[in-house]
Length: 480
Image: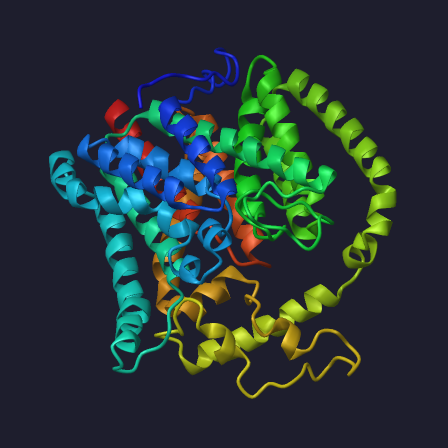
């Protein structure tokens, strides 16, 4: 676990994308390859041992990096796919990605006191969020488990949310360093590039790289860690934004960063998600308008992207028709269903606004008393049997159903603080960490827009962005 480095970029632009902990990364890749032997035990053992070693070293920053590494690389449902049983629905990739966070937690409290703790806003968000999580999910889940009422909680979703809380806490207690913040962004670009490459290979070669999993179709691109083309988009949009900002902000053209940017964008296009593709173009346009001063880079990138998109759409035109994507892309039925789901979700929230229904338990509550969409033909495929287990496809409604409406308070504090920081910095022309600030701003905006029509799986992105903004604020105070 020494600081062996891989470079991915030039030293004049993004300070070179260096990957510390290279041995940790290579070890993880080798452990993942053992999944093709239909056993997850080598990978689980590797994660367990390395997490304990890192915790004993008291290296909070490596814990953060390791969590991001695992979140981007652990294959979809690898425990269930390897063992063919339901244990993976409880201890899935969310749990194992968060394992280094859980192991390090007892060591972090002493470390926190040595750093002086959290500021008032951070403390408020964490305490409020943990309290809401306890009363809306943990307590009812435990009550159900011991037969004292309550309701079922889907542990996989619970672990995913807990990961966000813990990673935010770790970001808040470390010493603010712009070099480490940039490393985090570099990792996300690098891992987004890896996911895009694997997704493109699966799409064109019609082979599944996901260990022990054979999808029904390769009509739309999906990635190593998610089989849903839509659900995988946050893992592509965030590195897309980061690579775009740093590429356009560079004084010199960075070929390797440009390749990563184009590769990730191609992967987004091949998901054939109308909303995801639209978001990528909207965000790209706003980034260009913000960084239009670099005309040479802008012209070169705009021409290349224009030619690339024309060639891509021309070559894939026949595939769109043969794969049935044309009807899907030109249909409004999907939007009609989602609007109806939003209505059902809001009705369920009205029945239990404070407590919600817990993670994974709100779907049945949404459809109580419903038998069929009253406004669709009887021959329509959009009946309750097809959509009863869907997400509500709107992240605000989704989290109100899972955590109650009070969760909107810490959520809006996080989102407002994250976006307000960059706007205020830009208005005052304080450009100390401009690339990072702009990257976090547009990544947050992209995920929010994406969540308007979808659930957000990696919700911890919001926790991470909020924490990074707070680190930048502390850094500016130290420098001024």
